[in-house]
Amino acid sequence: MLDFMDYIQLAFAEATGWNGENSYSSLTATAQSLLDFSTPERLRVHLSSLSTPHFATSYTLGTVGLIDGSVSYLFSTVPFENTASKSALIPLRKIAPGYRQVQPPVAPVEDWGWDSLLGDINSVGSGNKIDNEVESTRRKATLLHATLHLPPPTTLNALFLRRLSPTMQLSLAVCSTQGPPLSKSAPQASLLTQLSHNTGKYSNEYLFSTDNTLFGWRGLWNFGPDPRKSQDQSSARLSLLSAGAEAYYSPVSSLVGMSTGLRFSTLPAATEGSPSLTGNHGGPISTFPYTLTLTLTPLTGSLSTTYSVRASPNLAFCSRFGFNVYSWESEMVAGCELWRQGRKTPARSSLDGDDGLEWARRKMRGEALPIHESPSTTPFEPATTPLLGEKEDGAGESVVKIRVDQSWNVRLLWEGRIKELLVSAGIGLGPGSFSPSCSSVPAAGSTSSAGGGHPPSYWRGVGVSILYSS
Image 1 (cartoon, rainbow, N blue to C red):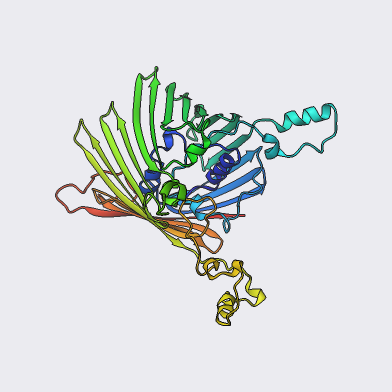
Image 2 (cartoon, one colour):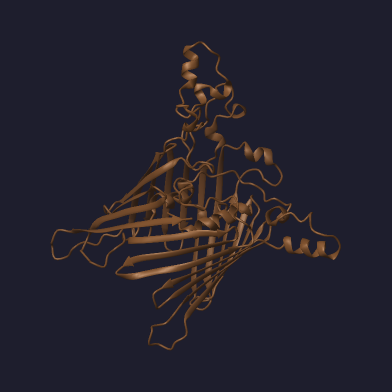
């Protein structure tokens, strides 16, 4: 489950029209959501609030050996007036990501339009005052976020995010860790700078980290029509093929890294059954939405393939196979997620004395039914089933995720809503030597076991995370 501050940052991206999915770092996002989810570590409570449309706070208290916690603050020049901030209203599918439906590439809006985001200035006075106000409202969208982890030695994480243009975004991330209590050494700090350029057709990211003076680049290219020139053709596409790569180099430590990847995914038009695409049959081109990825790291010889499919609006499966050509080691991981739909809210309030069956009584009396009271549109017989991943879909009440690898390491996660609380509970099981300090699931593919010929024991990591926001 995402933290409240991560949820607000996603709302910032939506409000400013930034497509973070069109990036090489999101190439395998679907498989990561279904297979690489983490389970909570023991008990952790999050108290969050969107105090004003521009300011948010979050406090965390956890018990992991010792009592620990964090304090977070966030400020944005873009107001979050239409963002659901209460835990009872936050759509669970947004804060608990699962199968991600890849959307067609969209060209950035060339009309900057920050006036509509930051307020209307037409009512301001005349003269120089208008010019000054125009300049202030056209300032670039900016987000500031800081988190202080306690107790000592404390760690400070800070983020500065700024939109430079419709296609450019700059982010500065700082991490500073205080030294031991009795040490007079300066805090260890690192800065990560990232400049992103996203045109819809392709995206580039340029990175620099003060840690080992690391330089990096990531790029993604979408095959097919350019959305900047042919909007209609892009919206009618059935599938999308994307290719990308990344490269890193550190002149200090002579560190070199690179990888490349491919992704093939069906688009919403392939399963919606549009008459212009399906001909006379009117059925969908593809029965199930699916995503295929292939990633290769040439220097280490690692090859990984993933296959994700949404078998129904509430059920998705995913598998990953990894292979190393140098060591002949392999990895096999499989997982799934199952959503439980909440009860639909009746169209009319029960205070009006309507139990939702008035349409049936009228039909038995032979009366004509108004269109808005047709039984096909009543809450008990919905005309359409909402699809997983839709922006306006908040009907999911809970979700269960499970993953298992070839070493029988198992993770089980339940996320749902209890009253006005968002709760995440998980457990990890796997073969290995028992260790009291082991509170999280080891990396996929680990094969540690008890030595000396003794049968392997099974460790358990159980945790619960509770989020309440107002």
